[in-house]
Length: 83
Image 1 (tube, rainbow, N blue to C red):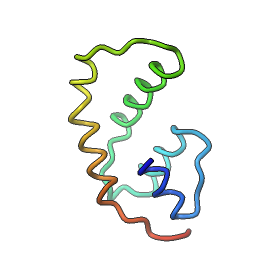
Image 2: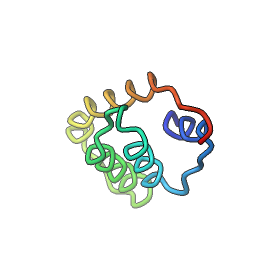
Image 3: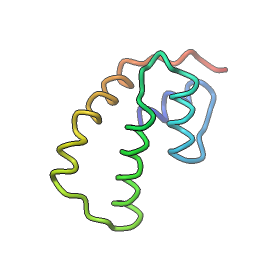
Image 4: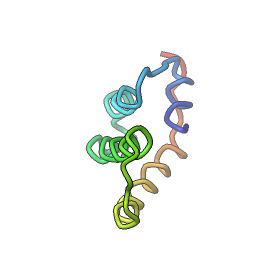
């Protein structure tokens, strides 16, 4: 939701999460988001939500530092306004 709010404040609406994260990584390199990490997290979420694939506790535990880092980045981020 932080990412969606960020791009909305810039006047954008992404049609997919992949587009959302690509926009953030490409248009805002100063944020320091890691595209590969974000995309892996997106794929994990999709496999779980859309395909019912169980995700192990170990997998989430390993992903937690990356999730926390990216959440902290977006919580501090300030959109540049409508583009």
